[in-house]
Amino acid sequence: MGQSLQTPRSFWRFLFAIVALCLGAAPLISSAPQGFASDLDGKPFDPFRAAQGKVVVLIFVRTDCPVSNRYAPAIQQLSAKNAGKAVFFLVYPSKKETADSIRKHDREFGYRLAALRDPQHILVKQSQAQITPEAAVFDANRRLVYHGRIDNLYEDFGHAKECNHA
Image 1 (cartoon, rainbow, N blue to C red):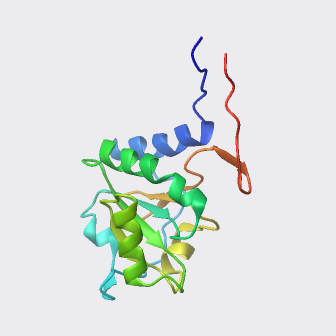
Image 2 (cartoon, rainbow, N blue to C red):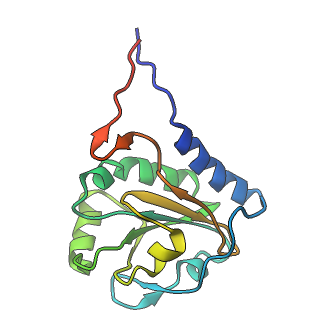
């Protein structure tokens, strides 16, 4: 018999938020405050302006987080699958991570997403992010409509959920 894998509920909520925004659904949470992070060259960068009216998905990661690193293929698949509807950005909130270490990390994990540094936690605050990895979805009007887990693979700190096999 093959594996019986259930799709996590939080994954579906995350994906639904992206799809609903792409179809013009009403915002769920009030507007996010203004602010900028920086690109890897140290220049201020506004992901909302760069998205040119599309849905913005911020994925908070760290170079040294094994859970974040394990999600690299899933993050890239979500980004590719929604490329025409949403713009995805990797956000590195740690003050200790340099642009060079982020570039190296992105190469090692095959990321093709734009990477941003957020050492002042401007995007962290806008997104209400608390852990890595974590996702935040904003509509075209910069309103936060989802923040939380990418899925529920990790239901407890550092412990992956076991899959049921049939």
